[in-house]
Image 1 (cartoon, helix red, strand yellow):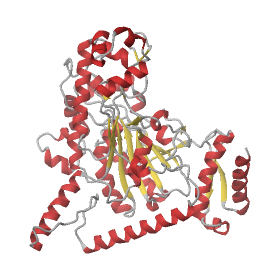
Image 2 (cartoon, one colour; image 1 turned 180 degrees about the vertical axis):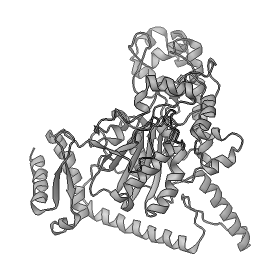
Image 3 (cartoon, rainbow, N blue to C red; image 1 turned 90 degrees about the vertical axis):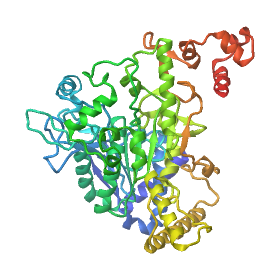
Image 4 (cartoon, rainbow, N blue to C red; image 1 turned 90 degrees about the horizontal axis):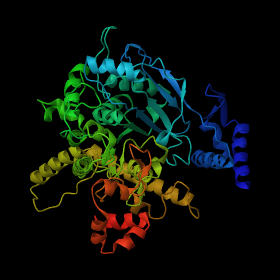
Length: 550
């Protein structure tokens, strides 16, 4: 309690010295605290004070204050860019004054692909096609939460949430007359960024374009375009992507059905029809690779090798949306579980060459905006830890497939021109090709700056361990190629609980094995024990033994 009082005293001191200005907002009684960095200088190093304020936020939370500022609704300046029904598109924003990191999040919500499916969507999912029902404020969850316990690494970031109202996987570019639907998802993203530039995005250090489900697909489809836009409007800002549950397979359905309803239509057929309806914007590098079938680019494993901008993939191996699109139905038969098992294997294969990926063996959908997002782990590393380590990495540590390919060509050309075939050319593992003297000088300058900042942090943290630190072995924990090795749905202890579709009771891993058709005696034989011992064994212990066997 004394700690709480001490930190709150620091907060009050800042208010009294003019370092903070309180401005009342219409978010239910909360207030935004605007920090004037210049007025904080007499108190000491502004960076150290900001670090202390972050600790204040955490400590005040523990002291019992649970009110956090909400995201506030803002409509686009450009009124010609709209939702499906012609109403104004927009976004929700919560500023974190003093933070130079921005997260722009794309909401998910499937899509429609022709007039019939869009009319049905209008009847059943109208909130995903209009802004008329948007509330004035919205509460952030998961990676968008202001709660440092729920969101330990990103709670003090500038948050922007873009509601999904274009039904086009964020790729549409057509404005239609009032009697038909418009599809302008790609243009909405562009206009949001333009509106954010004068609000502080222009001086940001990093922009993370994130999204879940259709929003995750939208990240993959728009990431390079956003990076190019930022290179024109704010060239010093680094752009990164974070795609959650948007990595779909263009596989065969379990039970093929006519393509009428969006949720039961085969993914390939729905996208093939939709890309024409939406006038979908496909990145040029991918379009060149699939000239006759540009709709293939909507599937992550086909798009990924063509990307130029670093992206982190979050994907359940047994994604519920994928299984729904494959028309599996409630999985209660042995054949259905076998198909789901095959889907997981195929998903795992497509993710092997992804440099930054988090793929737990769970039967679920969407993780980033769930409160348990920072508790789910693969190989002892949580998603929150892995993303934080990855996005803080230097350009030399991040890798992008298309750039790696181009760097190899540069390396080959350098060796050939130098005539030193036997000589080894040191190749960077960066996202930006290094082929000019100016680029090399910039690279060396950045390296010196990192070393200087590292020494400064060591001096500042000498004798104490920061709460946001990943620990003494942070480099060892900083892994970002995390794919579960176990082969069955829900074999990961940290998976969200699964429920029986008929009884609504929680199902554990052993229940799932029974659904696969495995009898108790075969499990006992595989583990080399008698039936009585197996049946009396704790399910968690048994699960651990089985997952080690797979």
